[in-house]
Image (tube, rainbow over all chains, first blue to last red):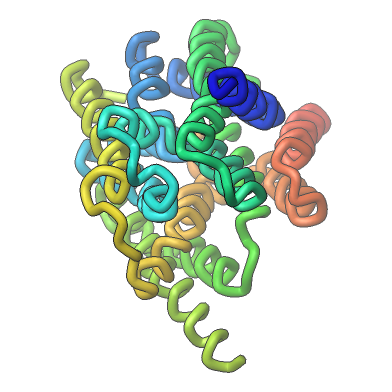
Length: 235
Length: 109
């Protein structure tokens, strides 16, 4: 009885994860194309998608690499984007804390925007879910998302070499990022952070080695936090 | 791109390990402890702090045109921004941007 119901929860996870494919498939394919066009070989492009599985950070790395940014600065900028996942990890521990280490390692590897978002909604709607069901649901979502992430990166990487330059693919990253940023501008604090990021990026571009990005990002982050604090105090 | 194969692989592994450690931070290392409100308040803005800054110069001064602003790219960015704001839908915003990029590019070439 118990095994059939965890299986059902796993399948529900897969079903809830499938709408994400509309974004995951083109996004990972684009990464394959952009990575290949930038000069990475197939194994390296796949290495990014399998070892990192974090789209925005991967695109950021590729973009900075096309400008021959020092490796350490590429690394710091890409990881800065992923810092938000510490937040995910902190809120997942209340659900997955009692899991054996091996399973918590797997959950950590698979902790992406999509699995986090669906899990939080599902666990909130079903407060009495057991640990086994929560784990099954989480794995269900990623069983659909992760293979598509890898597979479409591969498709993009293979296609990438055959796309002629007049398609202006250099502009795929700006358009995709712009589209991703818009829904993220939920509050005045988010807007303020984004504006500071843009203004400083444009005015500090004289700083060598693309270090201006980290400076702009740091100031933007502090701005977001301060505006949030200010809005709270005014209430 | 002028990196050696070795440094590309080192970067990939370092990004993989670094990203994993961020995801593993509470689940495996710190355990069940609350993040301080001060830290949370900053982490909330990491994505909107990095991504806009990364793309702003790419939109205004694209490398492909030698760093000169170019109408089809500016129009595409504007279309993505407007459709993204109105629909809050990532896919529609990308489609609007790509369609504008290619149609304006076609019209002025």
